[in-house]
Amino acid sequence: MTPSLASRQNLDFTLYEWLGVEALTTRPAYADHARETFNALLDLSEKLAQDKYLPLLKDTDRHEPWLDEAGQVHVLPALHAALHATTDAGLFASGFGPEHDGLAVPATVYWAAMGLLKAASVSAAGFMMLTVANARLIATFGTPAQIETFARPQIAGRWFGTMCLSEPQAGSSLADITTRAEPDGEDALGHRYRLRGNKMWISGGDQDISENIVHLVLAKVPGPDGRPIAGTRGISLFIVPKVLPTETAQGERNDIAVAGLNHKMGYRGIPNCLLNLGEGRHTPGGRSGAIGYRVGEVGQGLAQMFQMMNEARVGVGLGAAMLAIRGTQLSIAYATDRLQGRPLDAKGRTDQPPVPLIAHPDVKRMLLAQKAYAEGALSLVLYAGRLIDEERTAESPEARTQAGALLSLLTPVAKTWPSEWGCVANDLAIQIHGGYGYTRDFDVEQLYRDNRLNPIHEGTTGIQGIDLLGRKILRERAASLRQLQALVAATVDRAHQAGALEHQADEVQAAWDRITQVVATLLTLNDDARALAHATAFLSAFGHAVVAWLWLDQALLCADATTPFRAGKLAACRFFIETELPRVGLWLNQVATLSECATAMTPDMF
Ligand SMILES: Cc1cc2nc3c(=O)[nH]c(=O)nc-3n(C[C@H](O)[C@H](O)[C@H](O)COP(=O)(O)OP(=O)(O)OC[C@H]3O[C@@H](n4cnc5c(N)ncnc54)[C@H](O)[C@@H]3O)c2cc1C
Image (cartoon, rainbow, N blue to C red):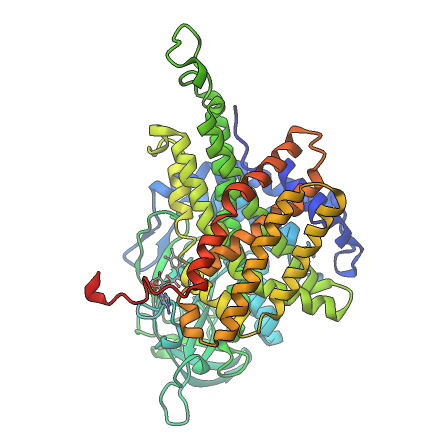
């Protein structure tokens, strides 16, 4: 059996039948589109993924990017070809509006198309994700000259972009960054600064594919006393190009140098760099200091950067989901072809032929679990994509605001749930392949290694939990949570009215009732420090409850089970609600009792 990258039948069901993306074409922003143009984009991405991305998956893993003596990072020629084919096809521009020479493809469809590339090589697709989000940030907050100079070449795919937040000593806590930016006058591109500092873990921080690299860098400007302003209030955002594009400095190298490459467990197609800014390796304008152009106002850097971070967080969730989807496809094919053992009621009957792995109940369990995690994760990120479209184009301002609030609430979940459970799905894919799965001759071990990054970058799972419970629920006194709960209740009502999946609907409602109770307790407690000590357990429970709701909502469209595809959706919904949803209670118990089991530990007790 030849495995596909990702089932197009499932993608079509999710986009057209469940999320109703065709209805978006009635909105002015997407009026040039129809199902045919959406399908054409998906076909194009699928072909690129098959022809250009999949063949380089293993090579990019075996041959990591390398740094030459002159300080230039190189990647494999096949990666150049794949990325150039992607830009030539106009994919970088596809999600932008006509004012930026884009095709105005809805976010939901754009994410699905990008997902196909990620299924084939998540790290190669990382260049596009970063570049598109970087260009969108500049298009939102930059001056017209900055947009023209720095966003447009990225939208065209000639230049690539990065995000430079982390530093060796400051990862989760960006308030502690020490990169400094000293004012250096003004030119046609805005307020110019000289930056000095170190940026760690920068994906795509250098490469030899694109003509130039646009780094978006967080740094601190001096306060009135000449010292950097403490905390996140002191953070501003700067565009730091690798090669300067100004008239006076056309083609001059900026003072930003690769100090070294990080050698990763997976995700090796995209270089990961330690960058030194302003160490004097290059001397633009005759002196050291990396030239950067400020975006927006002083002190607004982190707030602006959140636009790119939020886009990247959904992008990380998408990558994690697609790795799980591909692992599931490989597992189905392997379990169909590989013969091993006899049915449970014919054990030891060597006179009978062996059966395929897929005939064994335990293998079916692992396949169904993978399906429930992988398709659940994909539906979550594409649902987030649909909220992006609502936030941008819904008819009334109220509907746009509501979609924005819901998207903000769900972003930590869309980032984390696929990352955590996508890894579990890939772990099961290895298990189904037995010993072969543990070798580098099969793709599943690499999928697992590639996916293992996702709970770490773009804010770890621990940080997402604090964001969800602290900022998005307790600080808002559960306002957008109530909005989400109304949507859950509507799905549960539909199940009752249709007389279908009522038992599952009751289980989903019960899980959400428990979340309501626990949040009410935490709000009354009014002690964020104690509550947030259990934020990850809360996020785990919340994520499972969200995905159970999404499974129920989709299963209601399949209640007649008229085809194996629909029967499979129903089975996955039942499996998730029967065997996974009960975990919600265990996680919430820890939160509700404010368990001190871990929090009371002192370092010497470990
Ligand atoms: C391959 C890769 C690519 C990356 N790409 C980029 C990039 O392009 N740009 C960029 O700017 N960064 C990038 N990063 C950095 C990434 O975002 C950070 O690694 C991540 O934010 C965690 O920071 P840290 O590694 O310093 O870990 P730390 O912040 O030291 O965290 C270590 C552990 O402690 C926990 N922890 C830390 N603080 C708290 C807290 N307050 N409460 C509870 N738990 C806490 C964390 O959850 C984590 O489990 C990348 C990282 C990797 C590995």
